[in-house]
Structure formats: C-alpha cells, structure tokens
Image (cartoon, rainbow, N blue to C red; front, top):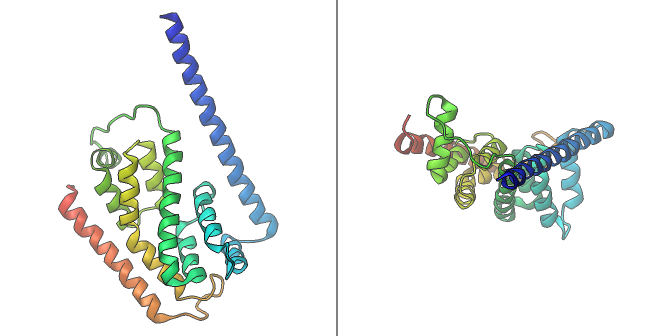
Length: 234
C-alpha cells in the first residue's frame, strides 16, 4: 500500500514537473518573440509581410506557410492574419485548401497544448453558469458545439485550448473544426486575395473579391445562429 502511494505521488510530481517545464518553455518562446519584434522595430503585420515577400513564388512557400501556421498558437499570433496572407501569397484557388489544412493542423496543436495542462479527470459542470453549460455541451455534444463556435467566429485558439483542456474527443474536434472553419477560412482567404499587400491598406484593392468574402462571412454568422436556435437549447 505504501509503495503504491509512493508511486502515485511520484507520478503526480513528475506530471507537474513536465507541465511546469512546458509552461516555462512556452513563456520563453512568447517572451523571445516579443523581444524580437521590439528589437527589430516590427509589428506582427510587418513581420508577416516580410515572410510573404520572401516566400512569394518560392518552391518552399507552402511548407513554410504550414510550418509558421503550426507555430502560430505558441506565439499567440492571430489566425486571421495568416489566413489573409494565404490569399495574398497563393491566391484563392491554392490559398483556400492550403489555409484549411494549415488552420486545422494549427488548431490541433492548440488542442494538444490544452490537453497537456488538463487534469486527468475534468469535473463536469452543474449547469449553474454559462461556462458550466458550455463546458458540458463541449463534452456531451463535442462535434456540434465546436462547429457552432467555429461558425460564430469565437476566438480561434480559445476554442482549441478549451476543447483540449476539457479532453473532448479529438476526432470530433478536428472534424468540427475543419467543417465549421470552412466559411471563415474561405472569406479570409478571399479578403487576402482582394489585396496586394498586408501593409499597403487598400492599395490594389479588388472590391468584387472582397464583397464575396463579406457575403461568405455573413452567411457563416447566419448559419451559426440557425444552428444555435435549432440544436442548442438556451
């Protein structure tokens, strides 16, 4: 019995040490990233535009874009900016599938990070608060709830981290993210395709492509409202 308790205690200490190490590395990465931007005098948009300029027309542009997208959750870099960059860099035909694959993989990275910091057993909410109700729905109706939150454009990484922390089914999360993010991804890629540069304002702006982007964005919000009313009780 004592040996069992000692082993269990050692596992808890080891788990906490791993989590503390991961958290420390993560904070160091964010700190290093922040220091680099300040030291170079760049904004995140400036840095991303530099990446677009360097990768434009290069054979390695797609793998480099995917790798940057995978690292994005660690840097807390906005997913919307990278998706817009896909439109500028690749255009709508190539940009949409590349952005969908990269965004889904990136969401899974954030999901795994959230799961890493989750306790072995997550307490079920009693429904007393909004957070309790949503966490309960995430566990009990994983696919529908994640898809709804993606369609409603809730903070991308917050949804992913929360889903991982609550240890919902990974397959349901990936499928719901791919499907629910599709309208938003298309709209942001089209928005990027309507521009020539991230840092040039409306220079070279294509109003037709941008109008299509807005239309898809509005449709996505509308779908989320319909699904919420019909499938998610208040």
